[in-house]
Length: 77
Image (cartoon, rainbow, N blue to C red; front, side, top):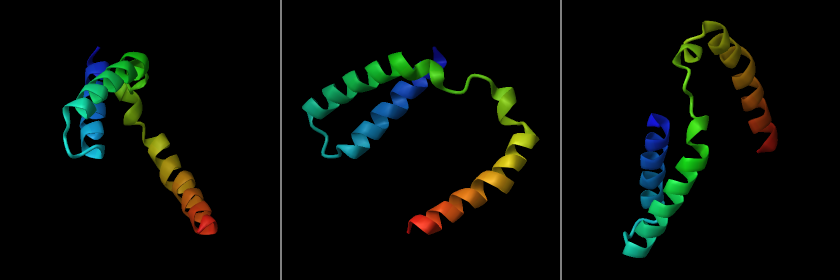
């Protein structure tokens, strides 16, 4: 439940920033879209905090993912 509330608040904040001159129609649509997205996708947020602190995953990320990403980024541009 906590992840759904967090997703709703973050989603609505992003919606408000992207449709900046605040108008009541945009705010109502943003509330509806944020509510639907958080209801459907709210359980997909990280709910296992012990996994985030795994040093092996961080080491793999730094040594494998970032260099490959930067190389592919350079090739694309």
